[in-house]
Image (cartoon, rainbow over all chains, first blue to last red):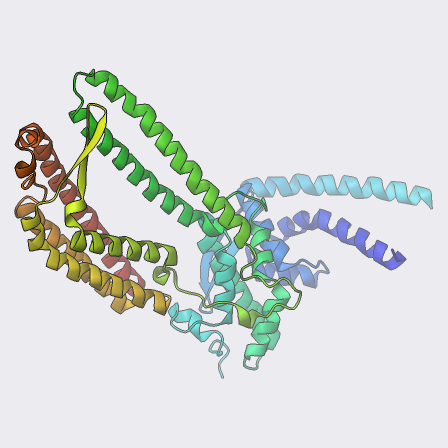
Length: 112
Length: 347
């Protein structure tokens, strides 16, 4: 396997690992699927629609986000947002994320 | 042109007479999903695709090519559906599950009725045996019949599931959204299998009642031998048969029309309801009129038997009337349900 390809694969994996965190963080404000994907993209996080919608359904099933249908520009849109439980989960996940970043940075810098 | 009135958005608003590629696509995804999530995912997918199309074409009008490109980008219906369905393998998947449940219900009901009916009749002629033991023996009979039917139907559907996966999906990478089959509004969907079964059953009934009415038997067991006697009163039958023939032939014609159209429309729905009303009228006449089950003619062959059979025939006569009454109730509720649906989809 080519070097670039390997790097690309690892990067993909890393991104996939934090996608839930990214999505939850965006859902502090209500968003519908497509607007959510666009916003994430603007912030440099690519997510396939095909991955996003099933993920949103899973999060809803786990009862950390809730959804509401709304009619907008003659189009039905399903708005997702964090519920109380989701907000708590996000807060704790952020702490976890910081821990991971710190320890990883510590390790990586130590190597250099 | 205004932003919200592009060619490819128009059909969505009315809920749709004019089908287009996005509808076809959504419908192809949705039929592979579990019913529970279907409506919701359908709606969300449609609005997402519309958003994406709008984003893609900007201010200009969307062409068919734009839509084709968009759908290709989004992925094959099968892949999109499987991203929603968590486990990928099942014995009987969402595509055939509804039909499976329907067929299972019908088969089990028929088996149950036949087994109980047969057992009751042999019980009535059981000489000298202990009635309670005989009654008790019906239970394992029903049990094995039901288990057998359940297994049979399940195996058939598992096979259908197993071999039907690739029917529409185009395996190669460049599948073309234009090849997608027509999407049909939920209320207008037809079940080809159901219609064929209906036509076959009606033809069967037509042939039997018109050409072999004397061959409809009542079985009973006497001294270990099965004996049968003709069960119908020919005179009563000849009175009702013309109406039944009209009803059944009209039903067959209607079923063919629906199959050729590939979907229900208002005309066929109204026709269907009219035929249901007609069948209620016939059933009511049959309850009011002369007994359809009778033992005339048997007297000539075996006068002693007539005496023996009298209680059985009177049971059967009453059972037939109760059965007709139940049928009327079922058909009536079906008519109400269908009318409600027609009104609902039009509002």
